Image (cartoon, rainbow, N blue to C red; front, side, top):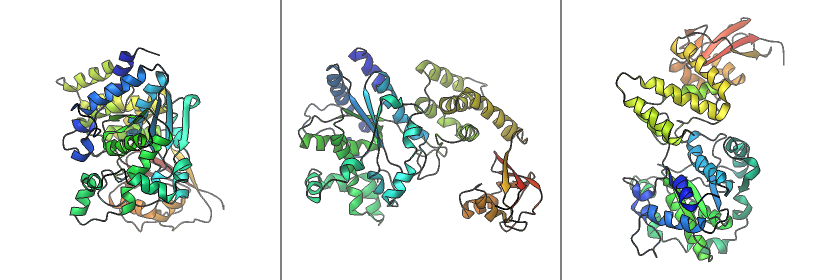
Amino acid sequence: MRKVAEQIEVLLRGTLFADEVEGADVAARGVDADDQEGRTLREQMTTELAERLKEDRPLRVYLGVDPTATNLHLGHFVSIQKLRQFQQLGHQVVFLIGDYTATIGDPSNQESERRRFRHEEVMEMGETYAEQAFHLLDPKRTELRHNGEWLARLMFAEIAELASLFPLKWIVSRRDFRERLERGESLRLHETLYSLMQGYDAYALHCDVQVGGYDQHFNMLAGRWIQQHFGERPHVMLTLPLLMGTDGRKMSKSYGNVIHINDAPEDMYGKAMRISDDLIPNFLDLATAMTGEQIEELKLRLCQKGVNPMDVKKDLASHLVVLYHGEAAAARAAEHFRQVVQEGEVPEEVALVTVPGDLGAGIAWVELAVALKLTASKSEMRRLIQQGGFYVEQEPVRDVAAVWDGRAETLVRLGKRRYFRIVRGGPR
């Protein structure tokens, strides 16, 4: 393993702690109550991490992800990149799928009560999470776990004992909870248990380090309390900045502003090209695997007179596609963007979709799109039509009642980039 100082330099790079964030929760800023030295979180966590590294052994480092949608997005991969750094330095990383925590849903930064998922739904959504994470992590050296392994076995008396560790004033003073109560929004008791559940994960995994966004500080702190309660040394909290979504808010499945890891190369490239110019540095810092020198070079280009930010954005978009799909896919995605978006041409290769014979002429496009799985729902297709994002033979269709005329072949476009050639077929 590398020397301690070298590892510290790599592992602390890019971190952001709760007490360094303007406007962060006062309750979430605090370090341990028994820390009398007045240290900042960075100072305390750096000291604790150095102490562990001096033991000259592989540390157990984990990241937990709740399956509340089928795909991971680039925001998740900010923390997975840090996990990868630990792995490259020889430490044991644990990728934890929160199949039980997801049934409650993390209330952090939520403006209202989250929809609750059944466990069966969660398991189905998280089925490919490990496969997606292995875009960056070495599967042979990654420990894959589900927190249902231990949370499902907890007895009520054990939960009550754990709940006694949490000062109620800390719970109700959390900004997200406090603001919801002030607005008269619903806040239910099960939501307050989320920190307890995530905190128990840290104890069950006997981890040395947990990584995650700085908005997870309180949940991580809960892990330290529970570990100390059971006589274990509290884990080190390494927190990271939040990646902004394509609309300028935190990248989140709840907001629908995400770039998914499993997006087709053309979609990933196109979404990256839609981010605002002021967000380019945020993406360079958090979403790429570029070296510090490469990132600084692109940031300097952004500041130079006469440089079009779109050119830097193209470099960013290509890098992201290379990272998850390879160089050949990135070249195709760049050419697709130039041809379809910038020049408005029909791409050379268009996906062929066959209409089953029992769906004849006269069926509404709203229904046909769902039947052919071009959109997830009729409401999504209606919105697309109403917003001017549906084209037949390059002509916009604005009537939600419009129907397919049954011709042998029809070119359709959804949004700016998604082209399909609809062909009439035989019976199913």
